[in-house]
Length: 235
Image 1: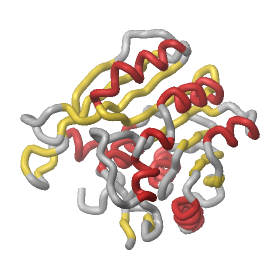
Image 2: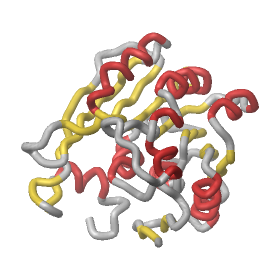
Image 3: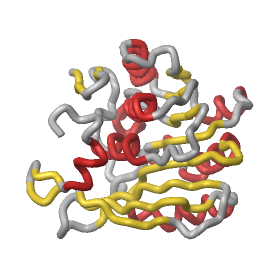
């Protein structure tokens, strides 16, 4: 089962978390205004976000960490089969192991963290591990971001909108301040489902906006097309 983008292909037979809108949004939206030398993707899954950032940036080193063995193997394959294989590396490790072993600082840190969707668990344990927040508590993610982020670094996530206030508060406690916040809606009349959040160590007034994905089924908004057209084949 493959998903073809304009410049790379994602194999996703083994990975519980398939290519989805959340990952594409984060990969396309993450601010790269600091011209990063290196990037860290926490919880890489298929490697989608790291690959999108490789396409968008000149970063010389893009590291990804993935705890699930099947996802890790698939991520490595996707990296090796991409045009940027010399810049991409995936570690098979949990975040706590990575924190213990790596002392490097990163200019961009991204994560599409596993989170609860209304406390519902499926019968697929692998998918549950990938999706639910007990696999990666927000507190642990923010602590790691603070540990690894360079002085001029940017930390970006996509989370459920209902968690936005709590996540911003966790970051602020560690002197990570919002740079940009985009609230995502499926259609103009639907409720806000996701928050794209970017943080830096510099306190400032954040840019806050809203993104609507489509006006009707497969009728994408101008803003969504502009954001994703470098990636999707049919945009």
